Image 1 (cartoon, each protein chain N blue to C red):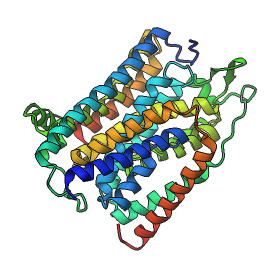
Image 2 (image 1 turned 120 degrees about the vertical axis):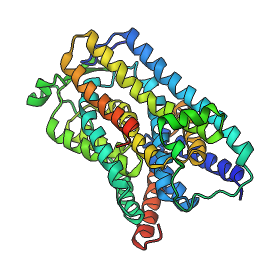
Image 3 (image 1 turned 60 degrees about the horizontal axis):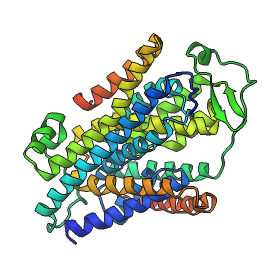
Image 4 (image 1 turned 45 degrees about the vertical axis):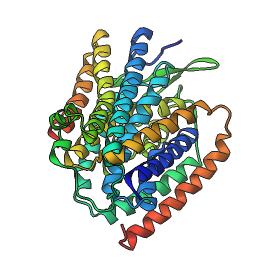
Amino acid sequence: MNIITFTLALGAGSVAAGFLGALTGLGGGVVIVPLLVLLFGVDIRYAIGASLVSVIATSSGAAAAYVREGYSNIRVGMFLEIATTVGALSGAMVAAKVPTSGLAIVFGCVLLYSAYLSGRRMDGSTADARPDRWATALRLDATYPTPAGEQAYRVQHVPAGFGLMYAAGVLSGLLGIGSGAVKVLAMDQAMRLPFKVSTTTSNFMIGVTAAASAGVYLHRGYIDPGLAMPVVLGVLLGSMQGARVLGAAHPRRLRLVFTWVIVALALEMLFNGLTGRI
Amino acid sequence: MRRVTSAGADEQFDIVLAHVLRFGVLLSAGVVAAGGVVFLVRHGFEPPSYHVFRGQPLPLRSVLGIVAESFDLRGRGLIQLGLLLLIATPIARVVFSIAGFARQRDWLYVSITLVVLTLLGYSLLAGA
């Protein structure tokens, strides 16, 4: 196999990952690393570097569409961004010291958790909840548009959300993923943000968090241009197409299929990590 | 188009922001693609070697090195330049948010955003 066929195969795989990631809302990043490592035999550190830049591409591309819809809470995003960027920097620094088999094991666990989380979603009104001391001091409470008009919400458990966001940043820097799963845990479950607000705000944050760790990866020499090129272009193309056909597809069935793909990849990453093959 | 986040920036500002993001992504994708063509023309028939980690050569690791390499129209240098532009896109959004908060005289959030920007700059320029 020469570089041209390798690039074409990798590009095709990345288009598929971006397409499914956009359709299911899970993001293409979670499958890029296992795809590169397990299918293409790429060193996991190169794979993480390539995945990281593709995460920035999809996040910024999607944010351009969401930013005008009035869902995202920029204050919540910016405040939590302190936690995620510090986390991302520490994760990226730790990544250089962790053996690759360790990275594979952590990756497998995070994949399993993402798959578990994708099965359950919840949404509830928090308009009559008690105000949180931190949310009031930081003026985080806001409203968002619904078919029935503006709906107010109160942000809950700010310190817990901030802590979870630090963890999300660490995982993002360590594994080169958007860590949307942990961000959902922090914003949906802990801070009780409405679902649409938390997904669009998390999408905005993912790009900034990934940019923080991408700088470190670049300086460490983990971002290979020959590898990142087909991955970034492929994921971008795939996610744009995915967003386009979103209305016509059956997201629930697709989500189920994608979830099982992730479970399979997780088990394979865990197996390879535990037996020391990665 | 309603705009109701607590940040309350007006619609015009959001439209500019959306354009900045879209422009950043398209520009970087274009540069990456152009670099990819040069890279494939020059190295396309060599065997790929990504199985063993060696790390990138020093010029492809720093902002100044990448700019110098891409001015020589080297394929890898151009791709890295495109990736740098991609990394710069969310950073540009953070810079724009500072302007937005400053216009609302929201100095608490100007400071919070400056902290985030400093962390990003440290990562990109110093490499941590």
